[in-house]
Structures are given as C-alpha cells and as structure tokens.
Image (cartoon, rainbow, N blue to C red; front, side):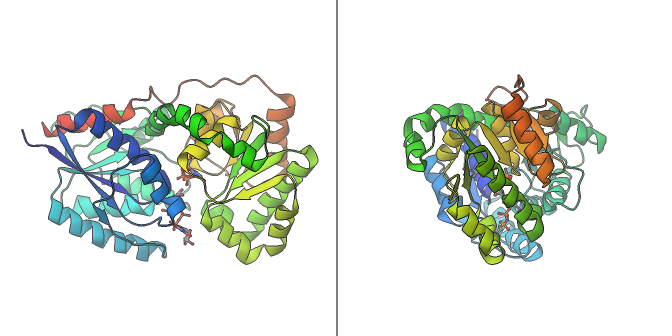
Length: 385
Ligand code: UD1
Ligand code: UDP
C-alpha cells in the first residue's frame, strides 16, 4: 500500500516543539505507513528560536525552508501562502498538518483549503474570545479551513461544537463534513519524553545562573499586547523588579527577541535597573531542554505564553498569567493559574497568595496521557486507508 504523505508545517518556536512529537512518533511507529515532508516557513529564524530545537529534539531537517522572516501581518502571511502553495502543488500531499495559532498556521490553512488539500489542525478549538489578538483570528480561520480538528481540552472541544462543528459527523471526512476529536495535548508528550533528559543534561544551568533548586521564579514575556504597549511593558518590568528586590528572590527571564528589542529601544533606563539588580537574571531565549529544566526547578512561573502556562501545570508549579484572559481556562478554574493582566496589585497579590499563603494546590490530568501524537496519526491514517 502506498504511504500516506503528510506535510508537517512549522514556523514559530512552539510549532517546532509541537511538531517534534509527530516526527518522533512517525519515526518510531509509522515509518512504513507515513511519508513526512517538513515545511519551515522561516517565521522564526534566529538559531535560538529555530535551529536549536531541530538539533535538540532530533527533528528531520526541513525539506523546504521558505525563509519568510519578520514582516507585517499581511506581508508575512502573504509570502508564506505563496511559498506553501507552491510546495503543495509540487508535492501533492494527502494532507497538511498544522499547529496552534500563528501566522504560519493561518497561511498554511488558507493555501491548502483553496486547493482542496485536507487540513489537519493540531490544537484546534482554543479561544480567548478576544478578537484583538492576532492569534484568535488565526485560530478561528484555521479551524474553519480544517477537515480533521484535534482539540486538546474539553473546553476547546466545546468551543468547536458551539461554532457549529458536529461531533456526530461520520466518514468520509472532508471540508464540508469535518471531524472533531478530543485528544490530549501534544506538548505533554514532549514533557514526558524529555524531562529526565533535561535533568541529566542541563543541571549545570543552576550553577551558571547562581541559583538554587526551587528557589527562583521563571518569567517569560512575548505577547504583542505586552511588548508593543510600552507603558504596559514598563509596568510589568517594574512590578517584577520590585517583587524580586522586596522578597530577595531571583527572577530568571529568558527574553524573546521581540521583548529584548522593545526594552532596548524604549526602556533603556529600566534595562539598566534590571541589569543592576542582583535578583534579576536576563538571559537569551533558552533551548527546550534548558527551558524544561528551568520550569521543573522553579518555584513559580510568570508568563504570557500559552505553552509555558501548560508546562507550569505539567511540572506542578503555580502560574501567574500576564493577560486578561486565557485559552487554557481549566488552569484558572483549577486555581493553579491566576490571571493578573499587567496590574501590579494583581501580580503582587497572586505572588503572595501562591508563595506566602502557600495553599495546597492540585494538578489534575487535564492534558491526556502523553500519547496524543499517536492518537492523531492513527486517525489520520484511518482517513486515508
Ligand atoms: C509569534 C506568534 C505568536 C507565538 C510566538 C511564539 C504570530 C502572529 N505570533 O509571535 O502567536 O506565541 O510566535 O514565540 O504568528 N524576531 C527575531 N528573530 C526571530 C523571529 C522574530 O528577532 O527569529 C523578532 C522580530 O523583531 C519580529 C518580532 O520578533 O518582528 C516578532 O516576530 P513574529 O514571528 O512576527 O511574532 P512573535 O512575537 O514571535
Ligand atoms: N521555550 C523555550 N525557550 C524559551 C522560552 C520558551 O524552549 O526561552 C519553549 C517553552 O518551553 C514552550 C514553548 O517554547 O514549549 C512556548 O513557546 P512560546 O512561549 O514562544 O509561544 P506560545 O506557546 O505562547 O505560542
């Protein structure tokens, strides 16, 4: 029987990480049945946002790199669509698999659906219900261009049903008869697979950063609302600096280039203060294993990242979310994540609630059994059998 040809589309850091679970599963279990072709749009291109993950997570080298780079939304998405369309027409895959909610996701979904290539959306159905987020537009449009939709949580599955997707649809599936599935979260596959390796390979990090296990707070900031609104960014950084100084606690901050750039260009004095503080460690973006190790050895995580919110749960760490809303609503309902927006009082309140009041927190298994990639590939194979 001919192999099923899947194009695996990546572009931004979290997609490379998510796609690695699919590539790994193909390599270990489905090599006889699936041919994988990887397209990298080039949305992320710095070594520490791209290449490092291919090496560390042993992902095959992309067959196509579109080299699109950074640009405005329209230009970036348009260039990606042009490149992806060319590859689709040349490669004629059985389907295009895409992840999450970036401009690369949207470009792939539109390019494929117009040429009737089935779109498989991994991490479907997530909604913030805030259409000012570029990601919310990307999610909505990508889901409605998809034939197989893999929702990672109950909430995401219900969102799809509320938008008219019918759980009772039966095969054969196509764009007018799409199939929605409740799966686990593919990032959990990676966490289970890589945690012990992270512990083994990256424990020197704590020494390098001069911090103790379980004694520091890990911070990531990269959302456009937090980096492009300078007043807001300044408020967040001031709050973090104050908390670090007042509580004499080290805050480790691997900075996304978007955030470093905004701080360098607009908040020079603040940067100076942060660099002078003995409690702040600003570092470049770290590799996946390094991030995993920092997450597992931190005592609290402060973030606006989607992926990092979930990983805080995987590692049973309380999480302060620098946003007004989140797609991962189960974490907030569970009380282990608190939405603090960019409000100094909310951030400080959540910090002392988690660390000083120290409530007993529980971390139920919201995100599956770590075999989500296999589940997805089995379903994809079934569609083309
Ligand atoms: C993108 C996604 C976001 C995701 C994030 C993951 C969109 C609209 N946004 O945001 O959903 O959470 O990736 O990290 O798709 N830059 C570099 N080097 C790089 C890449 C980017 O310096 O390799 C800088 C450039 O100044 C660029 C800026 O970061 O303009 C923003 O990059 P972009 O890919 O547009 O968006 P992200 O903020 O990374
Ligand atoms: N991550 C990483 N290095 C870093 C910051 C994040 O490897 O310096 C990983 C993190 O562990 C998670 C993913 O990147 O797996 C999350 O990506 P990001 O925060 O860029 O985007 P989002 O999830 O918000 O779309």
